[in-house]
Image 1 (cartoon, rainbow, N blue to C red):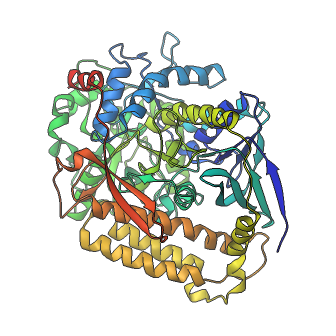
Image 2: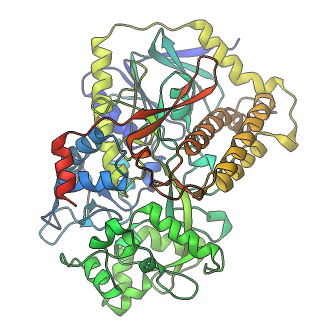
Image 3: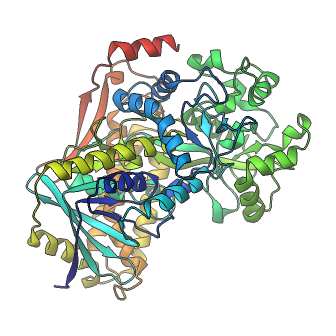
Length: 605
């Protein structure tokens, strides 16, 4: 058997996006030995792609904002099946985390009197998103890296974890390999934090980059942890649709926050036709009132383009399906129209949306200050993930924590834009804090060498199989993505999702026998073969959970069950690995919300 290198840490953080960095910073501040593993290069995380801003009730632009309004907006956006404790902590602690980030060097856009500027975003009652143009995530990663690099964190770049190790019930480390040379590494630790991001690469059209194959979700599941809310996949309403090479790349909600409007091929602003009853009191009845809101008129209601992402995505799909889409299968998003209302509109757009201006100019040869963009829904975010304790972020496996997109509960059935960035700061900090506390208060762990050797043998098995290039690793992944996109996508039906489960079962058999050629060095075919385990695991969890929830709620829309169910408002779906290795699903009741939080929601309407 091949040799492996052993690394000793008190806390191991898997994933180096915003959540992982914030967890590592907090854990290392206690003086413990912290290891940070990232699948690609440090700095290349999906946090960078979060453009619009970080949601925190700073009340710098509208003094009516506070944590209670933010909490209420988050719960309403999540259709009230959120983990209310996580939503409460998030709303209360987000302002402090943003100010802390500023103290560490983040350079936010400013108001005229020098405060952090905040912009409008979908589902938020008041302007709440602190931002750096449309490059907020990039600034966050830069700041966290600059601060964290001096904390003595041991960073392992281009390393992929294939198995979590356990000592009895408790997590004790991980087995991984470096992607450059294919050499194995074993990490021995007292606590592990999962911060590996999302599962977008299980779908054909996604804003996620190649790393987002559901590794953390799968690792936790196979280690015995519960997954929760896996049916809720957020399809961001606006991704690029043309040219094909950039299909799915994110077009920030900040475009709509700065006045961008959605139109169909007939030039009609279709979002005014479908405003949910529970948002009618906050949504503009006509274009002029909506424009006043964008300009900062506190008395005006927001435009319908800033409704929740699930609703906007479905409205776009309706226009496309009914033949009113753009030439390349999307709709039009127009920010150029503001020149009718604003002097120096071109300079304003380039200042507020610099990344979007350059993205469309370079990739699609479109000047967004002069002409509309073509956009359509793209798989963006998973609300589901590892089931964790609201206060500590620890999973159902002792010593295993999860945060960011890997953890679940705060968003319920749908995430509000901007909440992901404040979530990773607030709950990433807590994950690191409590992981360090757990590591300090519990004794040493041991590693089972037989388990390590078995994991290495399993990882190397594809080299021992004959490679059939007509049904190889890439073909299996592509078949999975096609099946998930078409059968477990934005609009779902029970029989189609059952067919998706059959496809997944068939692809599992193929993945178990797929072979790869070449050596372990620089071998993307082998890397894809190992990613298939994660992709197939999370895809099955999504399909099973979506079939089980026989209603439409938030990001789940079922054509065969189009209404919300009062019964399903009381439950979350939990997925866990059964004793026989099969995937099992169970409904669990949502804990009752304290009366004071219920009163806040009633007070906020």
